Length: 328
Image (tube, rainbow, N blue to C red):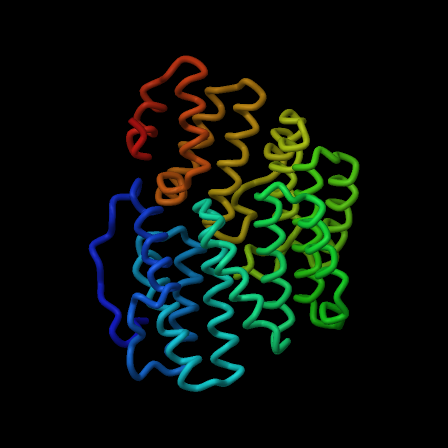
């Protein structure tokens, strides 16, 4: 669905996608991209749904066009309508924008987007969106090395009375927050805390079942808890346990292409940490097959590929992957 005034763009080269997407989002957040005239809440909602689908499928070249337009249109609608619905839609746009900026490792813009989402959700009209905003803030705090604060943000949000009730999505959002705190414990090298919190998240996920919930937030199910455990075990210093977790998890059980790409990159990182370079390259190639734009655009993947290039033998497969990532 195209918003009024939205133009098609020639898809950028995959290796340049991060810079193209970030610059477009920056300009929209600074008010340098004019908002379209005549946008309606229904148009904006459909546009956000399309952007979420692009994110889930790792279609970042489409997001490089769509997200800046959505931000500008959202501000235009919020200024014109001044309704809770308009603010909630704009909060959803900024929540998605924050997730994308975290993925592209732009923490400065990420903090700006996350704080705007936090302010927009202050009305309390959507407890799931409010909790997801808190989870993004916790992730950014963790990436800044503020582990105590990151855990406090996630666990305080998980304990909110607004996430209690019969709706299973509320329990799923609590699980996502607890899962985030578990990963923060791993990054702080608190293996016991990581495993205790992971157990709490898994218990909630098992109550919900393998069908999972909250696909737009990355999904929550026993499979997604296992996905986070791969990275958590590796961060806590046990890449062998991370690989064992990855071996038990079938990527097809994960709800989106984006989550499956995360599986392969986390597995590759664990293999590299374990000293099994060939398996790490194979995992990255599997991720590239699933989601080429995710592998080619993400700075964290580029760092992993560079590490493989300088730490041992370079195969034709590895050199080809580096070339496609724009790494000379």
